[in-house]
Image (tube, rainbow, N blue to C red; front, side, top):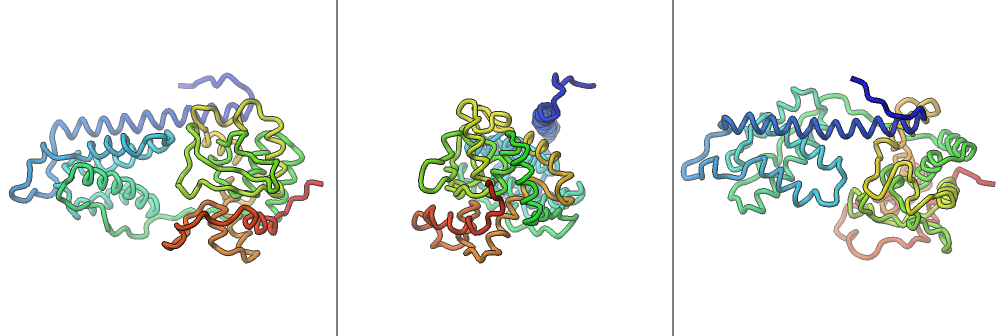
Length: 355
């Protein structure tokens, strides 16, 4: 079966195709979960014999209850991708263990689930992500329901399996080459790439910016990065001010002048959601022939860390610029580094000259 995308423009076609793909992924994840739940509710399996005096399994909080609770409490104001991967990861657990009562799950259940994930061909990194979701949902269910049990998914040993894909950083020469080409082509897709290249922002962070988030009139031009209904941020540390220098300053100026409406990049974002998957597919396709194999739009973020490290920028300032979590209790106190300090260090890594 084929579907007409109603456009001959490559970027628009890519965006439409990715939107359809994301919708289908969500539908399939929900369908798989519902089918799994239906099968196991018809005939509940036995997962680790319950000890004497424990409530019957039918009366206990089950994995499906943990999923519903987690989405209801934690899924608010989260992107659709959060719902999809939470359903998918919990669906894996229910597929393997049945819709088991949480108090009936033991360490052997977690081990069985780990082996099930290894059997599916997942890498260690992917298995750890799946376990993190299941562990968080079960923790919340135990806490909210006052269950007198431990979380079976805590402390499970996960061996090194599969090949971890390492995204190489982009060299300074290649970054400058991309920035110069963005300056030459001078369109909204290239403004987005250039903005990311000298700020280290995540793609979704940049693609979901509002025009008002760009502050060009003060002493230090900067991005005031904060969450929006159409684009939440990954962590609390992601809320930050990033100085605009080099290619990012040029890109912010061009995007602001040409913006139509309140959003900086209307091609990839509206006031309902930010389609970072569509942006990623289109931008990576354009960059593929211009960068070394394996380099993608997210590689600019890794490269910014390396560039700041090369000028001996203190690691906690690097973390503040990139929105990474800095370890240590003392890091949670105070308001962080002033904008002028961040600007001074970022000015040391500028490659692009807009003159």
